[in-house]
Length: 371
Image 1 (spheres, rainbow, N blue to C red):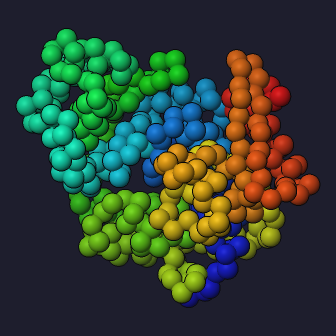
Image 2 (image 1 turned 180 degrees about the vertical axis):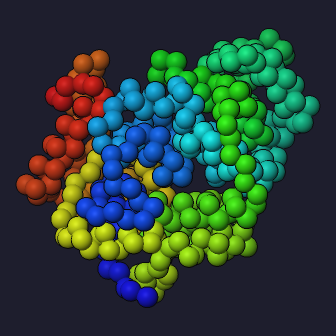
């Protein structure tokens, strides 16, 4: 098994995640220009509680895409937003949501029972809310969160003290609703079986094997522990998935551990040479959030700079050569956007130039002038 350095590991992840693109074809990793739907499908699932942020996560991986083309993918149902993994919002390809929910949603719901009891939510309330949602959304109707909450209130179902968000969470986990088309800056809610008209049907082994294949191809090099955390599969399930996927993957050793990645990716990385890059990633991007061990990309001394006060809110990051070297923020108007980087240490002239280039791409994505 080949041994990877930290530089090689992060370069491979930049390539597998489509943040950077290999110069030569790789089995399973198409280097042609990808659409937003292609990107989401390749990435398997992209953490999405920050909707504007995840749109940029898609856009930076889909060369030439714009906010409009990402919204088009959401408006068509080709990409949907729901809670397929870890009880957390993600973007997934519409046809894949059902089988992904089948893998872990029941355990996520069971694990939330104590919290639901504290909120006065039980099966009777959930089924009453489901009936309201089905009646309100049937026939292709799309309602915003506030509009659906108003329907719940009319039926005597309270949505205060976080009850409303937990009702949506439950109904999404039990395959009744998902987020659908954009309504201004927010997404409306729709009935899942009306919105996704051609869902894929996989048996358990097929689901486990496909999830493992797609996770390690899009996030590798990654460990079994990373996969367990990311997917929240049970250990025997994750091992079974990796066993099924193993002949489509290869391995490297890093720091005494086995990492799995797409077959042929190491050759693509070697052909690309040692070129370094600078990237502006949103706060919850999979490059950092896709692993339980983030030390390859982020020096531990800077962890508090990324998640100030350990409040669970990840700031957008400046990544140079695969390593997080700072954070960035933006201010925007309807016609302009300004990007303000904040380095951990002084940026080099090359890094400053790279930031300017990526900021320009970000402005183009938003359809605004860079200020």
